[in-house]
Image (tube, protein in one colour):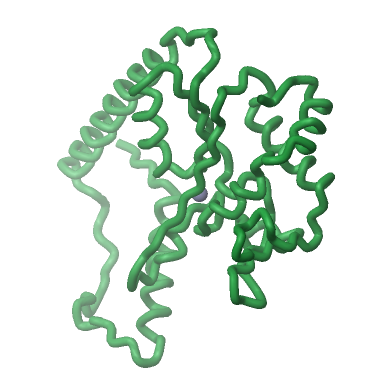
Length: 244
Ligand SMILES: [Zn+2]
């Protein structure tokens, strides 16, 4: 029997081990090295019993995957109504938002949800009230292209350095086109960012959402909102639709 070992798994274990070693060498951090075995030896090739149990494990996972795919196929075949949706909500593509989306759509067929990177296409640096500098509110692969300063009256009265009305409209249009939301708008379209918090965990960054860099999408959602009649006029002209 041939056993195929995933290189991804080996790579992941190597990264975890490197983290542990780095932490163990960090000054001031006690590490229970005594729990590690004194001598780690390479095991002999797996026995037939081990291989048989491995094959059963793979078979069990394949059955689970097949049943899950059948459920998803049945779900996607549900006919959609052509009437105007009452509510459309855009969530981050982070898997933790999927639970909310699934439950919302199962509650009422007039609710529709979308997935989009949780910075909503707005690569901004958010400077909270009372601060001179802020933090990037976008994935780590992007650089903020403008600043947004929070003011007492809210972010809409903010000083948006590097972001004029034209650029804001272009960014909003890009988001709508990438969403595929250029027609059939619901009466209410809500952008729902998310944040996360972790306490005392060396793998904190690994738990952050990659699509929004682990930052709350709140300021991004507020900047993305086409809250002015002028903005709606231009976006309607560009898209040839009426954003109501
Ligand atoms: Zn996210």
